[in-house]
Length: 114
Length: 114
Image (cartoon, chains in turn green, purple):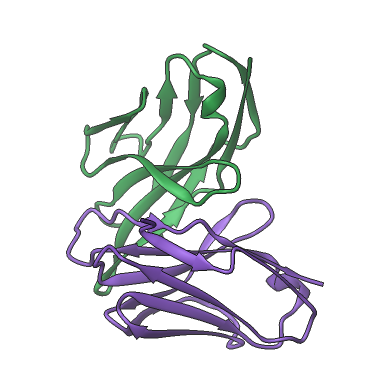
């Protein structure tokens, strides 16, 4: 079945540092790929997405490129802020019958220190 | 105006009790989901309903019973609660015709079984 493998955390960075969170996937079809973010005490929010190979998703300074050849979707940000502290989930979406189903990675806790 | 709302936000109860969590979405989406997040933040799909019809039913104890009275509501009833049921339960919704598969999540319901 489909699966997502994500870099284990926790990750601790200083403000303005460069961030990379690795994500690789296994899927039989052509999934869409996502990064979701979960701030403390809240539900998951979509951060960015990419629907086909070589697409780049971007939002709030975060970027990720859909790499079919390496089955990867690594999340990057050039300069993190304290407010970026959260848990980040890589996910893929594929069809199960008539519905889309998200399969999530295990999440990576990011803490940014001032 | 909250898009996906869950109640209650917190639930503390004794082993053996029966409890329900309610979810409502005002996005006009066709599909609703329940996800379980364990203490290590791992997210796993439990159920999905499309327009009141059950379409995804993962390996979940039959003590868990979802009910969808209409396409805007998906409730989760849990019988004979066990310690291992302690988790955060997330409701989510999506548009079935959305080929990308973006899900909108509620804020979560934290269940603690004593």
